[in-house]
Amino acid sequence: MSKPVIDARTALIVIDVQNDFCPGGSLAVAGGDEIAPLVNELGRRFATVVLTQDWHPAGHSSFASSHPGKVPFETIAMPYGTQVLWPEHCVQGSAGAAFHSGLDLSIAQAVIRKGCRREVDSYSGFVEADRTTPTGLAGYLKERGIARVVVAGLATDFCVNWTAQDAARHGFETIVIEEACRAIDLDGSLDRAWAEMTALGVRRAGLADLAD
Ligand code: VGL
Ligand code: ZN
Image 1 (spheres, helix red, strand yellow):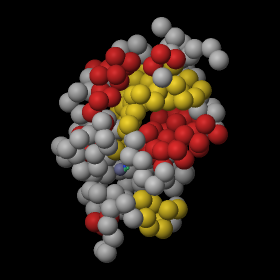
Image 2 (cartoon, protein in one colour; image 1 turned 30 degrees about the vertical axis):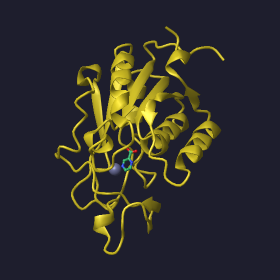
Image 3 (cartoon, protein in one colour; image 1 turned 45 degrees about the vertical axis):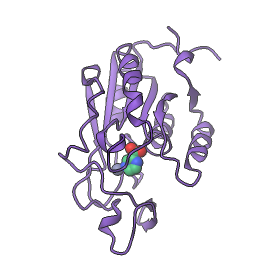
Image 4 (cartoon, helix red, strand yellow; image 1 turned 180 degrees about the horizontal axis):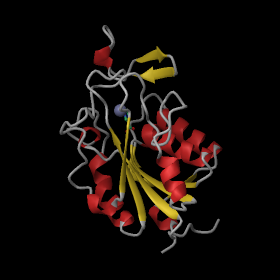
């Protein structure tokens, strides 16, 4: 397969490089902070870079603390399907919701916030977990003539996975840069995520797989 070229029709989508997903955060992903320098370097090569930001109201329905008797990492049935319950994280305006200080925000032209409605989660940067409410990201990218997206960030098996799948469903050629992602890996979720992404034609690549 030829190496994907970073041209004017290629965007970088950086998923949730936020304090709560980095060591010391409430939903820390092992090594989450390590990807910041890689993302910064990558981002400088793109004319279009979008950051996503997990942005939950206090008392969000994805928090275990919103469901009496439930503890983090249990699941619950929601109207839109099975929901993993998480520790409280990325509460709007909190320090945990802020981007990690190692991330160079100057690389980005747009920030898409997601999970903003109390009753619905959103792992995907494109469509909420009800699978019907768009965030506007697809329209933003299409209006800018984007045909191909490169995805990096946190966490590989949740928000990167769902965003990459939805990018492919929207018709974007989609490439995930594995070394610029880190995973939660809950009960085999990382292997499942790669299987799901691959089945939709998402390319699993390394930084070296991109053309210079
Ligand atoms: C994420 C769990 C809950 C993520 C966000 O960014 O992967 N995971 N909210
Ligand atoms: Zn979240």
